Length: 115
Length: 116
Image: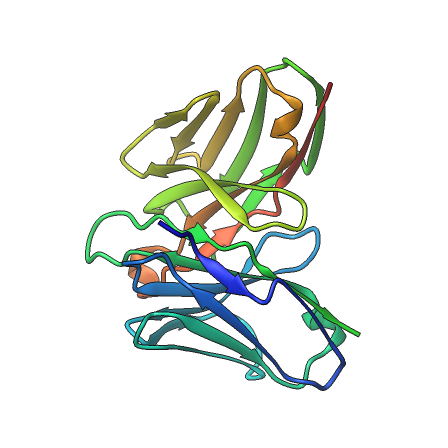
C-alpha cells in the first residue's frame, strides 16, 4: 500500500503570494493533520481534519486554511506569504477509532521557500 | 499546556556504541508516546509507539521505555551504525480530556551522528 503522499515536493514563492499544498492519506485513513516544521525545530500542529470537518487548529493566523475532500485527501492554503512561512510542511494520516491508539503516519513533506 | 523536551540536542558517537536518547514531557496524562526518525530535509518515519499501559516497546536494535509518572521516555539504540545518523523526535498526543483534536506535541529532536 502507498504511504502518505504530498505534492509538490518543493515550492518557491514570493512574499504576498498564495500557495496550495496537497496531501493524500493512506488508504482507509480518514484523519489528516498538517504540521509546519521550521529548520532546527520539531513540527508544530496546524490543523486536523476528520470526515471533512475541522477537528482542531493550532496557533496559526487566519492566513492558514485547509479543507478535506470526500476521498479524504486534503489541501492546505496559505495566503499573503511571509518570509517566516518558509518551512517543511508535513501531512500525517491516521485511523480514527473511538477508542484505542492512533499511530500517525507522515508524508515526505513539501519544502516551501518564500523569497 | 504540554511541553516536550529532548536532551541532548546533538550527539556524536563512534560506530558500535550503545546510546540513549531522552525525552521528557510535562503533562503525564498521555495516551501514548511515539518516536520518529527524520533524515535531513525528509519526512518523519515512525519508529516505535508505546501505549500508556506499556513500559517498553522493542523493534530490532531499538528499545523505547515509558515512565508516565516521571514524565520520561528513553530510546535505546544498540550497536549504533553510521546509517542510524538522523534526527530523532519524540511526540505525545493531546490528552483526550482536552478536546477531540489528535494533535501531536513534538520535542525539538536529538541530532545523532554515528562516526564510522
